Length: 328
Image (cartoon, rainbow, N blue to C red; front, side):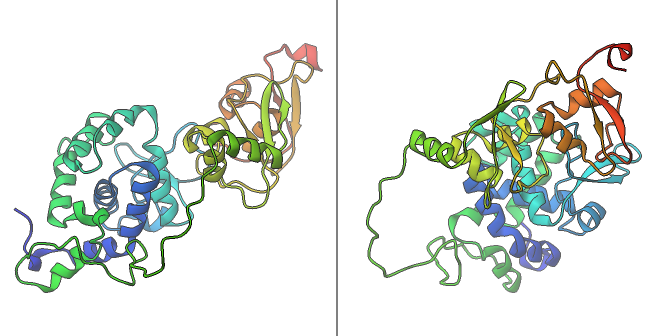
């Protein structure tokens, strides 16, 4: 049975009001049910009040991984001092959660309809999102108590409305609020239909504005003002997460002048360049992009601490596995 109106948690209701539109937009952009997104955020962040949410803007409990190049926050979870991702704001956490679920590990989730929140909850647990054996049941309970399954139907105000009622009335999915940007009625005539560009036309236009270049056997383009990984991925007709992984860019925003590699970077550098000298303050990511080598390969070749993000002093960084005598 769902909670009565008097038992609804006010902190949960405020959180739902604050983030419901983001959850709905992420369902549209990434195919993850808004109900699941919101329930996970509520559960993992204690409605935005957990230490990870407050100090690291991490609302989904996502830990660091080998290719994460964003901020980090150490927190005692399953083990002492575990590394968690840190974000500039909570919105970044919501987007990274949607990107995180694009990993092959969770691909079977997308076989389930977005309306089937129970199926999604159990499949996420099966795929290993959480170790709690009751994780799926907790998500389902939150969704049903707060009617999160109605978020994407245009009934975005329903959870909060019920806090003032002593009995739960059937929700009317036909109600539309003029102030709601997701469901706005307009009296304007139907706009003239414009034929959208084909995928090939989008790619051709992109490469016209972004001449293709090549280094270390990998094609790349240079980012221009206004480019983002999301819009570049759309124009190239590829998944944003794949593009980010090819560029070691999980947790990074695209900046003007950055190289955007169009395929996986290499595990070794060019044949005539066995090493380079890093400068103090240079980031490991920038070196990786300059030389078209994965961060993981640089770390292994030089036995670097996986937590190193920036070089603090000038040092020799090997780009190929060679004998020291050969490069003195």
